[in-house]
Image (cartoon, rainbow, N blue to C red; front, side, top):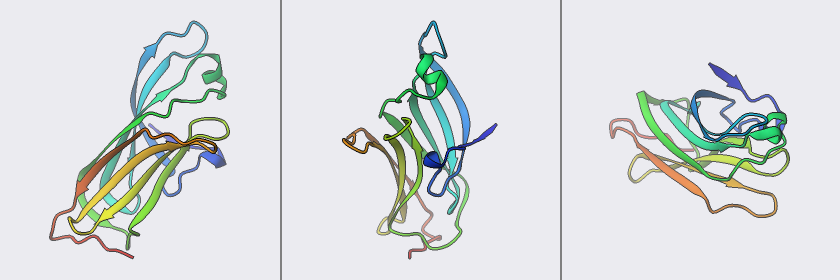
Length: 154
């Protein structure tokens, strides 16, 4: 089942859709949903054949139920080739390909794609930032591209 992020501040830079893979409860909440770890899949729209899986904490309880909770800054990412890799056009050296709000106003989860031209590899970094004080929490993954297929660069 695909979900479309509907609020303007939560729209992705390039990726507008996430497919929910699943979730696990981490803490029981008597009122409202439990705290969870959710896993979503994101297909890179400029790199066909690459999917990124992101796990992150989702705050439950009453605040989580009404959308006022601030989710934790921790996230993990794993990107994998899921088919033949091809490109819709040239890629910049570094590009934010997804961002999603983790709080009603200020915190965002971001995914940035970087191109390691020397090794013909795509590197994906996830981190969170906040208007006042960012977080050093981050996770990185890499997808090597077959040497027969060079990454087109801008």
